[in-house]
Length: 213
Image (cartoon, rainbow, N blue to C red):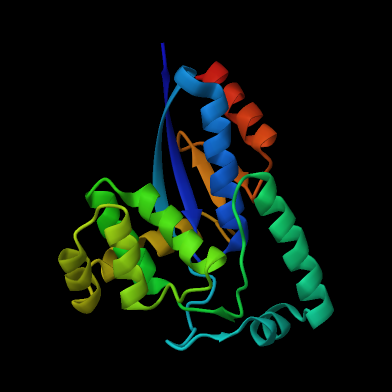
């Protein structure tokens, strides 16, 4: 008999480790199979809340935020690409980083429509795989349509500023809980795993949580 498992996935579209973490998590769940009945809910976290609409060059941004040199950024990028490949996520060139608030608004709506995880995956591929701007309404609508959501409704959500208060409220809630980095994955509202962990780490954690339930 399957055991229910709630998974609150706090993340940002702009975060490469979130793409790796989600892919790893999904593979872990696939390994566990029918023993678990998992429900994944995406929650917003903004790495670049003050970022302007045109974005910023990745090297400049990381240099200012973390003090990283171009060589260090390239080395980290190579490690990220290798980790992505190990879980089936293909990273492409990403020359700019962007504001993702509108992406989070659209993801909130997608959750109400039952298409949140597919949209999250589509947005992660659009940005990290294809270098598209996840703040662009055209990019967001294209991603929504690709996972079966209504393009006209998606445009209305974006143009009318819908769900902005909901997103900000969730962001505040998780900050007040002490979430400072992403991905942060909370199982059954009690167990926290952070970072883009390997498949085996997620699998072991989930099996232990199910055993303790």
